[in-house]
Image (cartoon, rainbow, N blue to C red):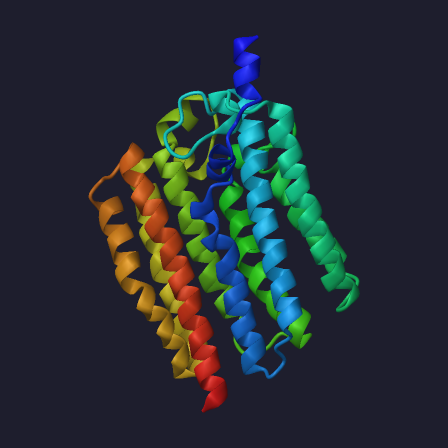
Length: 301
């Protein structure tokens, strides 16, 4: 009875920590970059940009709660380093966390439906695919995140789809290097997941959660992390060649990127990788701010 009462008394601070705010840059960054494209194309629609942000943040929060629920009921989070796990710690009942995930998906679905109905109906299918990908990352009987495919989904939905989608609902065309920018943002979102899975590698391996980090091993996962950072700046450079040199403002994120990479190269493990997650998220956000500023500057010159 005491354990049950404790599980019904999760504080607002615990719920916030369970939402994993350090991952929010992965939702905000693609909307910033896509909005920059819209401004450069002289097609900025403020309320569509705001709705795109609602979709991205709601999906990010929902997938974090969904992962908490699914990993928690499987016992994967029993000895996990890092942020609060609501189910794994016993702070909240699984049904409560599942309901929170469903609520996030619901908010994303409503905002996404408005965007689809005011742009193109086929965007409904894209939104449905994003929600399904978010749930089945760790949910269902055969979660693809347990088979090393999570990075592919993050690249597609928190990179290409989020950036291109934000721009498309405003511009209604693929323009101004948007795919390259989506790839740049996407690989940094993947880097966040790689750092997360590198931190959790020992416990994931013990729980038979075959993430990409488990499949690659420690050394190759660290190499992949560095390669993803390098790829982001390569995409920005090519986009700058095609659109405007102002897009090289994405390089303002280089000091944060260098700090994250340095810690990984030095062999940081466990809790020492938590600051790497923070710095990689800030790298992505600052990279997107640089792209946004670059697009705005290019539109004024």
